[in-house]
Image (cartoon, rainbow, N blue to C red; front, side):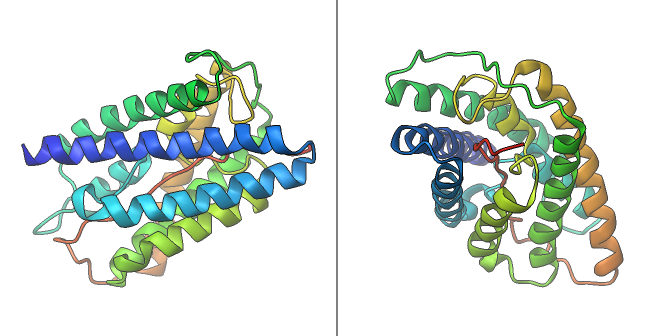
Length: 245
């Protein structure tokens, strides 16, 4: 039952995260035609919403909301006496995160009187966008697990929210950095959408970024203590905004 409760927290948190990303993107386009203003509104809402979700759900599930964070937690701590994640927990978290992301997109559509289920037509297949996803995901992994190895996981709401807010602006892809959220955003043909044909390449780039982030973490913190009993907060995100290419 404890694992069910944790998976439910991952479902609800990921759903809420996608609702924030997609909903704030829709609202931003309704309020302004200026892409810079739209991006600012979307990034601020997402950073703040993410910080709150991590703060509230971190004690329940670790507030991953992101398959690459869950898998990284398993890989990086699997040899510890009390690993942060076990294989069966990853197997419960990842489907919950994916289902939550789709549910969040549907909820955002419905709240703004759009068809509940849409298939996005927004192509995001350009190579420079995939490079942006590698960078964004690598940075996210370093931020999340550097805090854990320093014994400062309590700072995750501020640090992860701040990183995601910044990554909206310094990555070409506006920092999805999350396979589940990428999948969910294929179901909203709005500001936040991504065409289904672009999803596989984005996920591959995110997995590559997670591996790169893990290698960088090992190089920076080779002998750092790992508070094994402490959940590893994480997130992911997902920038919704379009910006001039």
